[in-house]
Length: 358
Image (cartoon, rainbow, N blue to C red; front, side):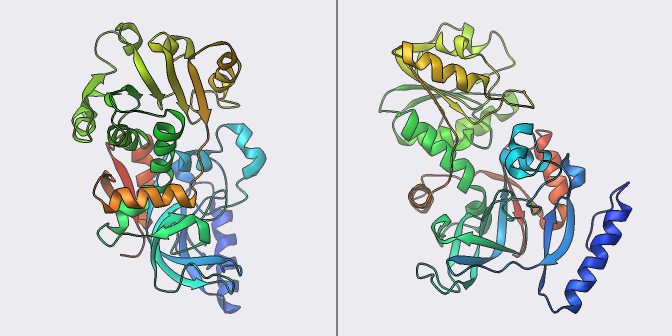
């Protein structure tokens, strides 16, 4: 059977096996997918056969070639922070197929779809909360897909949508980085940080990246003018250097300390909702929202959602060779659990691509 062995889950395995047999007898087309029935760490992930989804009249079914792995996938898998379960399912995930960033070939289209046609090579995000990208087929909204540049590999195209769009919004739309402006990127080697470094350079920033010594070479290769090892010497907030824009992607410093190294009219952008609180990790965002009314410093927070214009910009940057995807490791779909384990443990310097149908 197409299922990872799970201790204390024999009953679930037998149930799913019976369900699959019934679905095959009913003539349903089946596909392989990575699913999770409960929240938890990587051990909850299973490779299973499930019915192939069908697109609505306004949707597209993509035969997935490759998929990406990013921090948001861990949140969906673990159900942390707990507040998100109000939308993803209180007792367990309501949408069970993992992943959302994909590249692939349009397999079929709904009756009202005119933008895409069968055979188009595309990349973008799949539909839903858990989204269903780690599967042989994925349903997508038309506006969540753009053409894949022929010069870009399936794996490179698959890893960029969520992370690169987040970085673009942080740098261009919220940080408003200008030519010659000093930019500090905390978490420069992470899934979003690797793109933030590149975009900050694209828009003319003088970039300082903060990361571990092991990843310093990679961050320099992406264009950073200076790299600070967060584990060596005083913290970056104690070095006495001020910056015009600070992008905090790491999420482990207080807003007060970051404001101390921000110029009088500089901009701090808090990216995402990290910070360690498993219930409601939004304390720094709330602080920014309140204090921003009483200071000349820009204190910005946002949660990113890929849109067609943003994906089109990413497409152009990749096609022009100005944006490196930064894929370091590739895993087959059957090894998605291992990919998640190594990604969560911080063993991988760059991006992770999951090969689905190469």
